[in-house]
Image 1 (cartoon, rainbow, N blue to C red):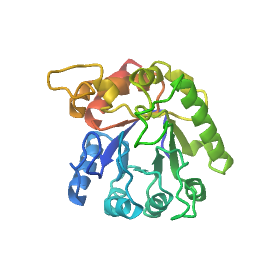
Image 2: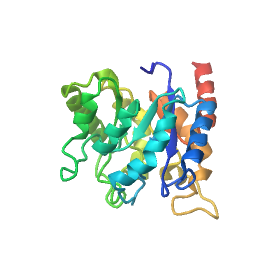
Image 3: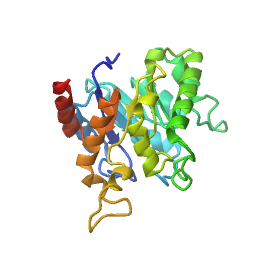
Image 4: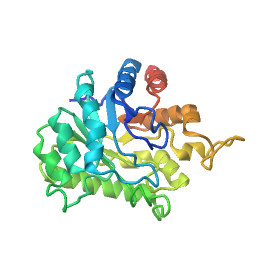
Length: 280
């Protein structure tokens, strides 16, 4: 039961060896939990914990491996006093996380992914059977392994809006109350640099569907493409060098109506949002 009248900061926790920004930094349970505790001290309203990278070109992780990475962390993270979100698209992982007391499912596939050979449940069935969990539905064009090779064609803003309206409407039709659903335009998920910035410039067009907006600009390569350094990679800078860019994008997203921003750098984002709050 989060009051989204106040913008919320979701802190990213990657229990992965290959995430684009901080893969491998929290590879064991103790270091991951210390990071979770730090994000809470820094002001995170939500922890978003994921055990499979969905960066461009990422390879899928088997369910058993994802659970082995995730469950020991979740057992402790649910005791930290803030809502816990799990970043997963697999029904079996969703169910195991919810059984442990996780509060939110954050799904880059918007509940569409299914492997009928290994799991008879759909993601929609898992979340619809839960009485209270929040669900974040994200727009992704293609899939992580190929999404940046063939970005969406045409107007990405209109396509994201229509997709998210349809996905949220179908979930509501499956019995999930509207106040449990948030939508995410999927910055960097199958979009070009120009299309990502169009999503920010025209973000107001995504707000007419009666669902709160969650946005994740943190350390994305589109931000790196704005700057150039002698040591820059192909995206314009290393992910860790995009702090100022990430905080700026988060503030602009909130100013344009986002209810939740998903970030790596919690303390700096919280401080910047206090400035925005002060002038409001």
